[in-house]
Amino acid sequence: MEASEAGTLKELLEVLGECTRCTLHKGRTKIVFGMGDENADLLFVGEAPGRAEDAQGLPFVGPAGRLLDELLTGIGLKREQVYIANVVKCRPPGNRDPLPNEMDTCNPFLLEQIRIIKPRILCALGRVAASVILDKNVQMNKVHGQRFPGPGYFFVPVFHPAAALRTPSTRGVLIEDFNRLKEYLEQDEQPPGPPAPEPEQMGLF
Image (tube, rainbow, N blue to C red; front, side):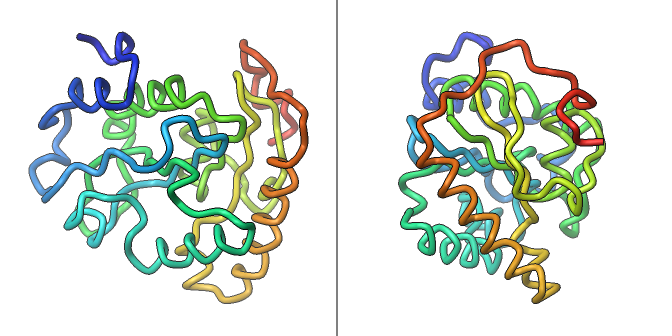
C-alpha cells in the first residue's frame, strides 16, 4: 500500500512502518507520528520532535508541549480534541532544523495526514512548519494569527510555543493568536476547496 492509498491514520502509520527513508532514523529512539482526534477540526503542525518527544514517541510532550496544553486550555480545548503532528517524524540531531531533503522525504506523510483528518483549520506552529506547508519562506512577524484560504482548510500560522519560552513577550502574542483560533473555530464559514491559491495571492509575501 502506498501512503496515498491509506484510508485511516492507522493504515498510514502502517505504511510508514519502521521508516528508514532518510538518515534521521539513525539517531531516533521512536518515530513521532502524531496524536489526537482523527476527525479534528483543528490540526496543529510543528517542526520536529525534540528530546522528550523522541523518548516517548508522542508530539509536544516537553516544555513547549506543556505550554501548548495551557494555550489549548485557555480556549476551552484539550489535546484529545485536536490533532498534533510534525513536519518530520524523527528527531533531528541536536534539535537542529530539519534539512530540506528530510522534510521532502516526510512531506507525503504529512500531506496524507491532512487529507485523512480533513481539518477546518490547519495551524502551523512556527516558521519552519508554515514555510513547508506553503513551500515558501514565511515572515512570521507579518502573518501570525491571520487566517488564509488553503486547499480545503483555513491556514493560520502562529509562533512556535518554544519561541514563547525563549522570549516571554511572545507568550502574550501566542495567547492572542489562540484566542483568534477560537473565534475562527466558532465561525460557521466553511473552508475553501482546492485548488490552493498561490502564496503571493494569499498576501503572505
